[in-house]
Image (cartoon, rainbow over all chains, first blue to last red):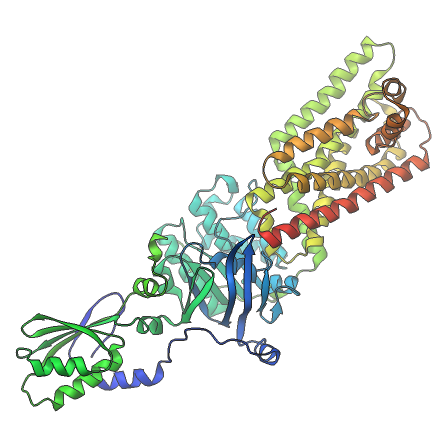
Length: 366
Length: 274
């Protein structure tokens, strides 16, 4: 069975060509820009449950510096949207705007149908943000900080006590429950910052780099908890990160921002497909590669370039291997040659490649 | 490592119920006030200074001078303690601006007005609780302080403390984030406590200052509270007009404080900083 896998290479023999035709039919085109709201009527019709967030020309200036430039973005309910972008791309500004921590300079956003400018209090009731830098009362202990946070969202009495205890245990903060916030390690403080959102489980949970400073075990635990928030609570989750592994693990959809502009939003699969020449197809033939075969390969739509690796091995760079391979195999049959394909290896672009393509920066170095 | 899925909780309806503004305000007030009493070194310094002023300096001076100076001095110490405790709200807001907690507050279901009110109420309560402790200590030495009139003065202390919170708000606004707040607070303390009858009788002050300044010194709310406490100490009836004046000044300062804090938090909302 032919398998396409991200980040690693899998070998298989051609046996499922039809799969590519099917994939071609079901995969949507990459959305270079998200749907733009055209009228007030459109806005009202989408302010119900379908869209958790609708940013409409959202702009933020810090003095003369524009941090976010007329951003139009719609985020579907009950999804995990990961925002990737280099430093200064406007990720944190966007999160602060939709959580009403910042006021837009222009434009607005609807959060669960509530306008962040006019109905900030309602927005705050349905959403919560976990900041990039942990924000806590320095002289309070983790249990007290979580208890305060829970009480602000109406979790009261015995229920609050129970939830706080469970959350402290889940986030491995139980042993540090009597340590003041100012004495927690960076990783512990970050866990506490993330844990805040799990004591009341908001309908819109916003995480700004949720696993920076957290150890590897902790990262996986936090990712699982974030997924659980979506799957069990039905929350919409927005995560801003520079960590590609985090994006790949969590994302239903990915948005890439750069210089305050919205570059693209799509599924990971579609984003990878959108990288021109990003798929590398290594072909091995039973006989030596001749000129007719090379001309045939060159003539297939989607071939970006190719290189002969050895007498019977060829490396072809294509845009979408799932479109290109069926055409190539069909044409192979038409060639009056006894040469046959003995092996196909497809390597997909990684999310790093996607990021580099759109921004020209390496996210991990940001 | 705790397994993330080991203890699944049902979604409880209460978590989805929005909290009322009043309750949210109360929670912020509670946290802010507790922050004052958690600052142990500050409390220890304040208590030590105030108690030593009251019990050591006051009693020693009483014996050195041929008048009962302690009866005059103790209300002054109570007022200066109230002043320090109430003004401390500015330090806490300053810290919250520097540490980013102000932005955390802005993400919570609480309006800018609610946040401003919570801080000023916390100043009122902080000043009242602290002054009440000192009042209790003084009452052990001055029997006339154990009186229903003393209890009646406590709400006055609360209102004045909220007004002092208003002054702290002005200082926060002027000093922005950073360390300048401390300098301004010390300056205000020098002026308000220096130009008052908290530690000196008006007869003495008026011999040093022009009459207009002396009149302003008498109208200083700190002078009014100290004089009201002295009226209780010396069993002299308190003038209702002076209490009315204290209320009016304090409420005005409180309203100015609400406006200032509202402006401070609005600026943080608009610019991300003050």
